[in-house]
Image (cartoon, rainbow, N blue to C red; front, side):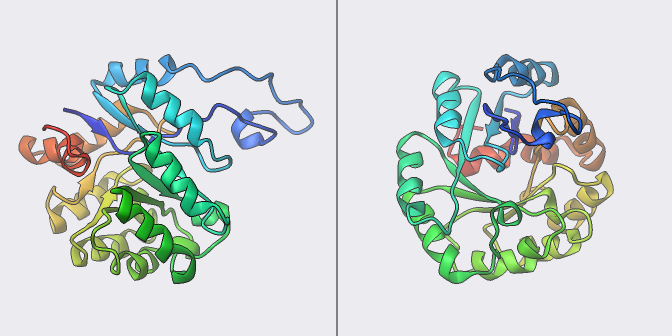
Length: 254
């Protein structure tokens, strides 16, 4: 089974130029509901069986993500989001777990906190442990979410599988590999990561700690599969990276 570990969908774009594509001075385009066939068609074209979906983080849309999963339970699994600073963050984790979401995405850079803040994040990780949720942390180059800071929190919560998204790209990849090597429950996700860095992680860690992710629509499923095919040439190892590892974390049959 081919399972993609990280993708973003959003139903409401608001006023952000980044999300609407509008140029300076242009009005944003009119609202159009997200059409699931957009992502499903790209998955089908690349031979992807299942994909993780979450909102991009400019907006938190847990209900929308849960509705996608409910409509296509054999194709999507969902990660919700919270603002750890919010008074209702722990209640929202329970609510999204009750709605069928299987993980929590954290985006310290956009949501304004440091990932090594124990006061904020220890209760969040404890709630995820209680509900059996995975945690994915967006970790492009940023002091708010450097891999060694992620380790500071994750090592105290070994029962919570923790995914370093983007492998800390670009400059923090070596740190991310070190953390995944030291912490048995920490995994590396490949979107926005150079092929050479995936090769480096594979050479040092083997295939069991690497999760293929595309972060569609920023990239595409077929492009990520081509990258993984070149970085992990052994077919059995590649099968783990392209879905076997994620299936194990989700408790799905391989």
